[in-house]
Image 1 (cartoon, rainbow, N blue to C red):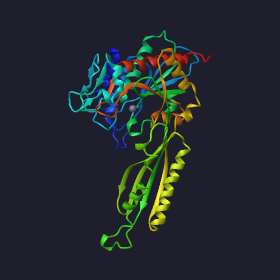
Image 2 (cartoon, rainbow, N blue to C red):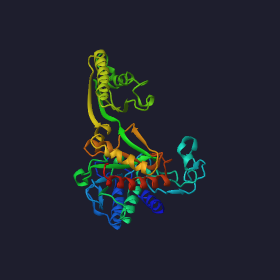
Image 3 (cartoon, helix red, strand yellow):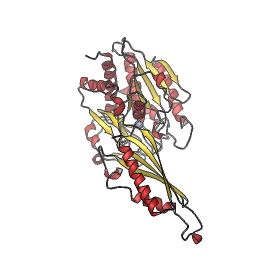
Image 4 (cartoon, rainbow, N blue to C red):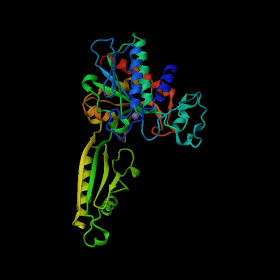
Length: 410
Ligand SMILES: [Zn+2]
């Protein structure tokens, strides 16, 4: 665990915040800096085929020591969320956690409270890592990066453990939705993959939302307000009506949970002449998405009838699909993790996430990729923390998983 902690604390100190407003890939130079560190480390551990693409994607191989075992891959992302600063992160290690609220020393207003963070109750006596409260910690996903590196280290140091070839892949810009844009799946060459990008411990996320984006453009007619009588068509006003007619007591993120889907307007911009509303459509049932789109179409048609001179266009683009659909193609992807958890005597839960992961897109492209727990909590917030014992559990799951893949089916 010492090495795991040392790695984690070293990685979080490299600023790898992803940047939304750029076409550069990766979106920030820090990701390349961390990438170079990881490349050196993978080489020092004697992994083979260590490469960093011009886009900053890193791949390496833990060579197999058994014949006829399929290749699997372990993925983690190097970037961190732009929702809070990732500059000058000072990791603080709370050894032998005492079960009390944790006041972060750099900003005493930032307190990780036990009553808001139930999981802390299980962590008394364990090691918790936080930032000083002025930045993100970046456990999302440096915990995954450190877990994958430590599992690779363990397998390279213990040739007596039987396993097939394992590909390591460190990716960029997951947090700005571009995590899989430049992963060369042929070069990766795996039949199943795992993202180490899940919270807490013991979770196997094998289901995500299916997702579309609706862009609603309200086209009005602008003219000087002094001359507007009977002539102006105010797109802002009609966009406001459009939103007010969308259901919110159901089919909204604020009022749904569990397996219920929603429609969520999240950007509104424009003027009197033209106003655009961006609405994300989400459901675990892909077949529900066209019904949501149809509902938006009905609202538009009603408004067009009431305001004959307005024109409302709705453009639907596909975002990602529930990974469960692609997971059925390779049931071993989830089955082998379940087996690994059983072998380790761990409880586990299959989880459906009300969102997407890099794994949703990879699964859609034909590489089944469930997401696994890696010991992070409260991510995207200065109150983020990681639990060292949970990260260690994630390492053990990977090592056991490697062995499960090497065993024959029966
Ligand atoms: Zn993440």
